[in-house]
Length: 222
Image (cartoon, rainbow, N blue to C red; front, side):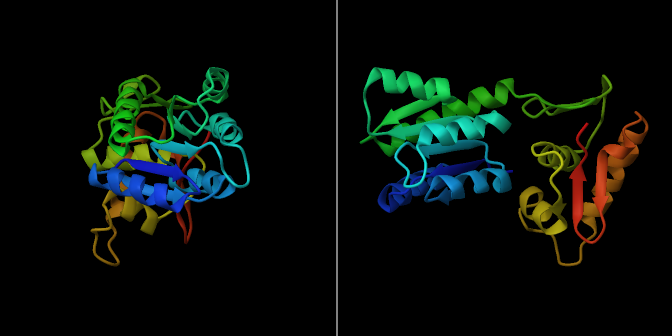
């Protein structure tokens, strides 16, 4: 799956340039012009990294970083016009992983994005109760026992696990895991769910995948 970048920036010129450079580098980019829209997008799009402008029209970027950090460990790179060292320290304490001072070169920003994502991938572990997923190593275990998943099953379970409790429609799953390439009326998602449940059932984990009739699927929270 493509890695998703959420860009929260109110300057349309900066948004356009940064989005272009990131998409050229192979990332999928979601944009938001203010903090409230950005927080909503963070919940809905589950980004792999957030680029956050400090001077937003509704909230200070540091406050948005604090709110993001309450529920997510997603890497955050802050864009700021302020160069004071105490301000930079405050940003890092608010939860930022890196910052860039405006004006900046888009190529350098892309390079910093790659560094943060590389660090995130190498160290990321998703724990939901007895379920443990290592995205970079592509390993999954339940109650300490390895769950042998196919590549698409692993992608599917990881996608659900990044936001446990949220119900995803079949269309959302098809778009994110299969890049929207499945034919209409396909039952591929349901077949993969059934296969995963069978494998998890052998480890007493059958019930962690919840079916919401007429809507889709969700991963149960402990």
